[in-house]
Image (spheres, rainbow, N blue to C red):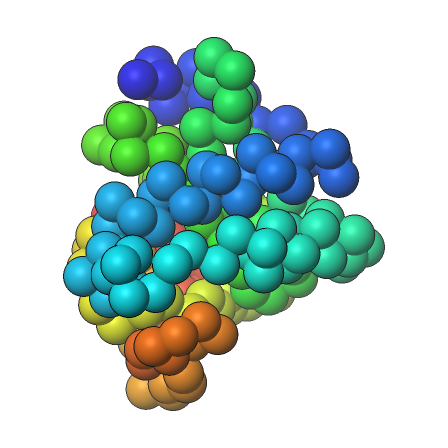
Length: 167
């Protein structure tokens, strides 16, 4: 487990991190979303997720930051001028404060653009993530859409006023 939030150091991800970010996201998703994407019915879309990370890392308007651990990233957060686009924390580090720190990193980055609100999309059945976001002041906007991967579950949009983030 990574230490306290005070010891959390983020670094800018590079294209060389794409496979490690796919692996981190896979570990987090299999642990938290197996009830939504049963792996025996919906094998993890390794190639599609890797391609998405490569595209995200190449987007000039997106900042991707990671927290390294022994041999692999332990957390990743990706955001642009108004949206927290990706967040993943390795399951071994859940409860360590990394998720909160990563959201804080994204919120600070988004706020630095002058935005007054930030948004994200989260699966409606991702109760762990939704609990974190709610604790940090994010609220459902009422907008929904289908997720990118089969079985295409529902995602809800959440927003937060940047002047009122945190408990």
